[in-house]
Length: 183
Image 1 (cartoon, rainbow, N blue to C red):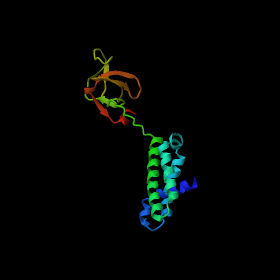
Image 2: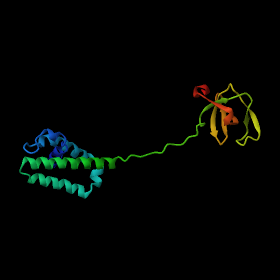
Image 3: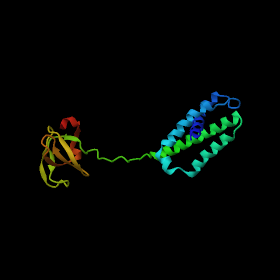
C-alpha cells in the first residue's frame, strides 16, 4: 500500500516533472507528492470505497506492476507520469460522483406578490372579489397596502398598518412603492 501511495504521488506531479530530465534523471521525488495527493483523495472518498469500478482498480495494479518491471529512469518516469494522469482522472471522476450538483429551477413569482402599493389616482375602487362586480370601498393614495394575492387584472390588498383585508383593486390603477412605505 505504501508503494502504491508513493507511486500515485509521483504520477500526480506530472506537470512538475517537466523541470526534471525525464530521459536521464529519476524524477520520482518530483512526481510522487502529486500522486500521493490523488491517492489519498481516492482513499478518503466514500464513493471510491463503495463503487470503485473493477477496471479502474485493475489499471492501478497494472501501473504498479509496470513500475516494478522498470529498470531505467526513463521507464520509471514515463510510468509515473501516466500513472499520475490516470489517478488525477480517477480522483476527478469519483469526486464528481460523490457530490452531484443539483439544479433547482427558480420559482416564477408574480411581480405584484408581496409588493407595497398605493392608489395611482384619487377615486380608486376596492371590490369584494376579483371579478370587480361589487364595490367594497376605496383605495387611498395616502395609505400603503400590501399585495396578498394576485389574479389577472386584480390584486388582493391588505392595509399595511392594520393587516386588515381591504379588497381587490385593478392593477392598472395602482402604483408600486418601496417596501419601506408599507412598514
